[in-house]
Amino acid sequence: MEIPITQSSEWHKLQEELGEESILVEKEGYQYLAIIKPTPVGNYLYCPYGPVAKDKTSFKNALGSLNDLAKDKSAIFIRVEPYDEAFKNNLPDSAKKSTDLNPKETWILDLTGNDEEFKLRLPSRLLRYHKSAAKKGIIIEKSTNPDDIKYLLKLQQALANEKGISTFSENYLKTELKQPFASLYLVRYEGSIIAAGLVFDDETTRYNLQGAQSDTGRKLHATGILTIQLILDARAKKLKSFDFWGIAPDDAPDDHPWKGFTAFKKTFNGTEVKHAGTYDIVLSPFKYHLYQIIRKVNRFIRKAK
Image 1 (spheres, helix red, strand yellow):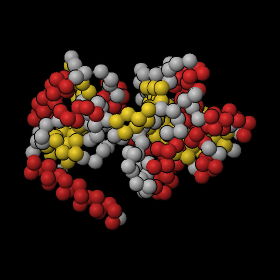
Image 2 (tube, helix red, strand yellow):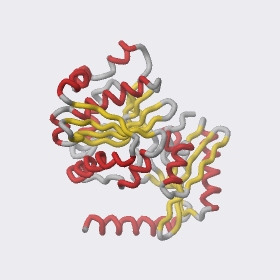
Image 3 (cartoon, rainbow, N blue to C red):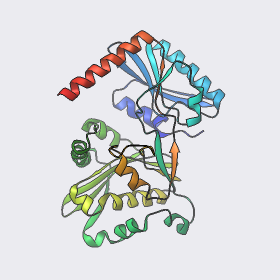
Image 4 (cartoon, one colour):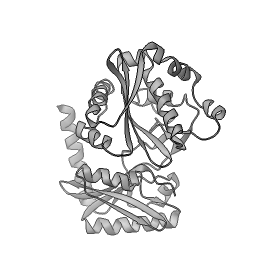
């Protein structure tokens, strides 16, 4: 039973430090981390990439346990994201497809095997850029200092304005970097940070969650150079895989915000992995409908501003 970092005890601790109420349940055959999310019409439970289970029977047991917890917390629905795509067929009839919060599709690079096999999975062009980076004055630094998150945030905000996507708050990113599983990588050139990346490591996988680069970084292929370093360091730690954390679906339109990111990630000889996506198991239809109306109104107000 593969347990993603978002369903781990480490993620549970992160939620506590972020001030979120969450409950971790570990049973024979299944595990879930449920975050209690308040809304104006009642609570809901959110299981990022969860619950996880070893088989369909265990998954059904996990949903039963979640349902009991939802009653205890007066939740109006349960938001689930089964890590195993096959389990979406075992969701109850009350489950409604919701907007995917975590990526439904991702790209995984295998870090195992001998050096020759491994190097063949990496783009030769990026390997050349990485090899010559130091000669060009490009320096890669690793940091666990929460104050350094400002470099990533600045780059992300510029990207968000360009692509029309949202970013996390500085406090959220700082709290993430304080966790023992997190590392921040910075790419420096002529005294300026031109790219940054935040990664999380568990026992088997490095997750490439956050990243951005400047215009200068684009010209110098900073993201490519940084990604090679992230992968090499993960292999040096004896991790088994590198999760690029999200790609656009094959039928995505040309204006999909992840289209360019996806083309870059697929230059690595990896494998596409599909998860089930995000679903809401509705427990109170009237309050759930009211919740959806409030969400649409709030979204309209934000766009108007």
